[in-house]
Amino acid sequence: MGRQIGGTLVIVDVGPVAHGGHCVARADGVVIFVRHALPGERVRIEVTDRKKTYWLADAVEILTPSPDRVEAPCRFAGLCGGCDFQHVSAEGQLSLKTTVLREQLTRLGGLSESDVAGFEVEALPGGLLDWRTRVQYAVTRDGRPGLRMHHSHDIVHIDECVIADPKIRATDTLDRTWPGSSHVGVVAGDNGEVSVYTQRGRQKRGIVKSGPKTVVESLPPHQFHIDADAFWQVHPAAAGILAATVTGMLGPLPGETAWDLYAGAGLFTVALAEAIGDHGAVVAVESDPRCRAEENLAKVPGASVMTSTVQSAIDRLPKPDVVVMDPPRSGAGKELVAAIAAARPRSVVYVACDPAALARDLREFAGLGYRLADLASFDAFPMTHHFETVAQFDRVS
Image (cartoon, rainbow, N blue to C red; front, side, top):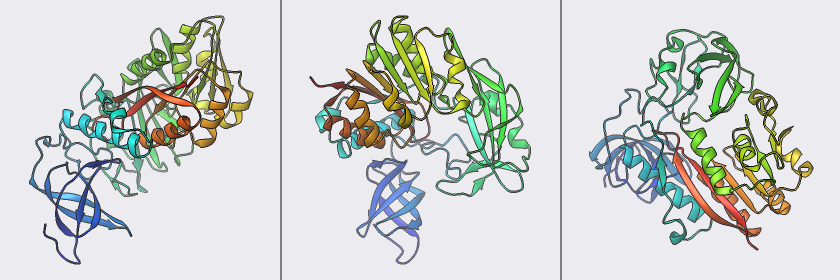
C-alpha cells in the first residue's frame, strides 16, 4: 500500500461492501469508505472528506479489477449521486446487497450467521435499466434541472437518466428550465400516461404542469388514483410482488381483523381485504392526503381508513389478528414496536426499504416475544444500494 502523505491520493486494497453503497478499505489504520470500488480490488482513491474516525473517498483508478466490474452504461456515473452500482454486473449487485442484508441483521439485529445464511436479495423482472417510473430532479437557481451529487447539494446537469422509464426520458423535462422551482418530478403511471410536476421546496405540494393531475396505478383488478407527487413503489413489478409476499406470509383468514400501518394508497389493504372477506375488517392508517386512501378504498368490502399519523391512531384501533406496516426509511422505532406487540397480533409483516432500520426493529420485536418467522428481499432499485425487505414476525406462545 502506498500513500501520498498529507495529500488526497491513496492506493488501497478494497474490503467488504458496507451499507450505503460504499466498500471498506484501510490506510495506516484509518477506515475509509470508498465509492465506485468492489471487494477484492486494488484501487487508487481520492479522499473527499476526513471525519474524526473515518475518511470518505472515490475510486479514481482501478489497478486490479473485480470479475464483477463492468463498464457503466451511464456516462454520468461517478458524478451523479443517484446510482451506486453502475459499475457492477447484475449478479454482483445482488451479491453485494445480500451481503449488506445479512451483515445488518447480524450486527444490528442480533441474529446468528446460521440464522441469515439462507437470506438472499432476489432480482425483479425487467433488468437494470428503464425501470424507474418516478424521477425527481433538483433545480438550480437559474432553473436548470439535474440530479444531486452524492451527499451534496451540488447538482449535475444531465440530458438523460438511463434507469428511468423510457416514457419519462421521452419528455422534454431535462431540456427546459423551471424557474422558481426547487424540484421537478416526472411520473409514468400504469396506464401509460405521464405527469410532470414542480415543487417550491420538498415539503410543498406538487403543482402538475403537464399530464393528468392524478396518476393511475394498479393491483389488478383494482386501480388506485393518487396525486402525482404521492408515494408509490418506483419499480413497476414491486407493488404486485410485495403485495403477494405480504399476504402469503400473513396468511390472513376470513373474518380476521388487520391493521395496515403507513398504508399509502391502500395497496396492502386491498390485498388483505380480498383474503379476509366481508366479515372481517382491514383498517388502513395513512396521514398523507396525496395518497387518496379514502377514495381508493371506498368500495373495498371490509376496508376502512383512519386519516391520521400511525402514532396518533394506534390506541384507537380495534384489536388486530394480523398487522402489516411499511414505515419510512427511519423504521418503526421502539415505541411503535412496543405498541404493536402490546396489541398481541398473531403475526406482523414489516416492509422495509432500509435493512438497518429493519434490523434495529427486529431486535425490539424479539425482546417483546416475537420471532422472525420468514424473510424475503427484492432488488426493487437496481443500480443503487437500496432494496426492499419483507419480514414476518410471529408471536411466541
